[in-house]
Every structure is written in structure tokens, then in C-alpha cells.
Length: 139
Image 1 (cartoon, one colour):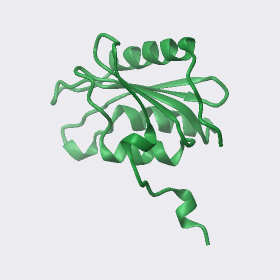
Image 2 (tube, helix red, strand yellow):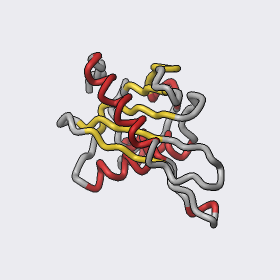
Image 3 (cartoon, helix red, strand yellow):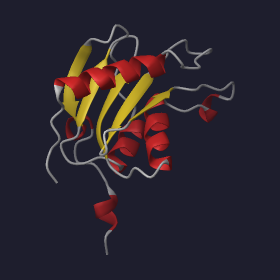
Image 4 (tube, one colour):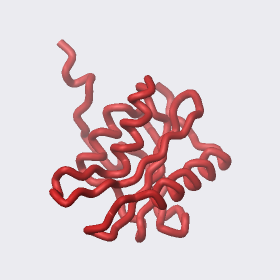
């Protein structure tokens, strides 16, 4: 599968959606709001925010919320993801693995700070080298 190159319009759309999602974060414990937005193959964008819980392990990261929202509507491959945090931090390992499950090779990853500045533009392979995926389970 070919690598997807993001247009300036797609980047702007993902940045806006990730920041809007971040504004909806429920983070009363960590006070660390995160928003994410994924671009589906059909051009739809799905946003997600981190949702914390008093029983800490019961919360969920913004990246997984966005991916699961897309998948729950029938999306099976995402073309790109943008993640917005206070300081431009990158996705955790669990999120990287979930993103990997539904991504294409060379998928662009945008890491933003709270102002929407792109702190890092990379690929999923750079964030999760030598990853394990569905093709590794073939018979």
C-alpha cells in the first residue's frame, strides 16, 4: 500500500479537530488534556479526547477513543492521526499499537502542542519500529 501524503488542507483539518477534541477532555485527576483526530480513507475525521476515571486504569487515551470511534462506524484503515497535548508529547505504547492495527504503511502522525503548533511530523513506523501487526498472525 502506498504512503499517504497529507495536503495542507488535511493537516489543518486534523489540527483543528484534535484541538477541538482536546477541549472536551475529561482529565480531573492528571489535568493533562489530550485530543486526537484520525483521518479515514473516505475523508471523514473522527476526534477523541482522553477520559479519566477515579479508578485510574479504567480511563482511556484520546488516540484510542478517536480510532475506536472510526472503527465502530466501519472504518478499517486510517490515513493519518494528529495528537494534541499541552506540550507536544507523543502517544503511549498502547495507543501506538492500536493505531498500528488500523494504519497503512507510512501513515503520517502529527504531534501538536496546545496552541496547535506541529511539534513533530513523522510516521507510525518511526514511533513504533519493528511493530507486531495482523500480518504476523497469518498461517
